[in-house]
Length: 197
Image 1: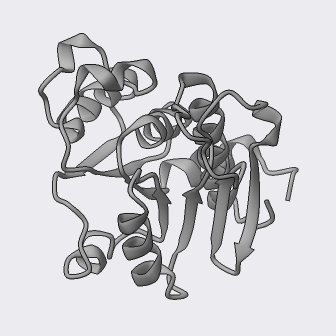
Image 2: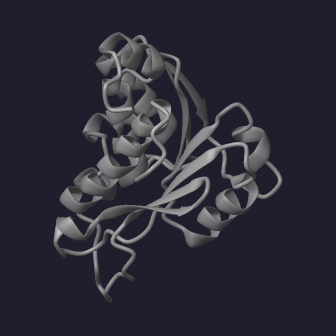
């Protein structure tokens, strides 16, 4: 499947529909990478607002402070690639609304900080109808080479180093961006029907 015609690649990306759940360091960078790659439709979900503490690793700048992350990121994507159809949902994902929010998307990137919301999303959406690309472990200053993509279940991939964060471990731009790159790259491979990690 590596000899795909470049026109076919562009078409498959343009026809792609991908949801990004959580727009922090991972999600904001994933969404921008997918927009730059020409993915045609993105759903951006997050209930939070941009804060100054986000600026060390998230795809926002000072002009976005106080804005909903969904609105700020949609603005960024429209500047980068105005042909992307961006849908937003500024709601907290719950057991009651998760299926409705993501019902039109067969590929979902999980980029939540809170394990509770990770579990809600995965438990509800790992249903044989979609692929989930999740993240686990990228805090601290460890080697970026430890960040990998693993095909853990039939329809689920996990990107990260799978190591618990050390006490006082922080999220910094380089390792977060590497993990976001793994997630975005797996999305593009899935759009090309390449399912191995």
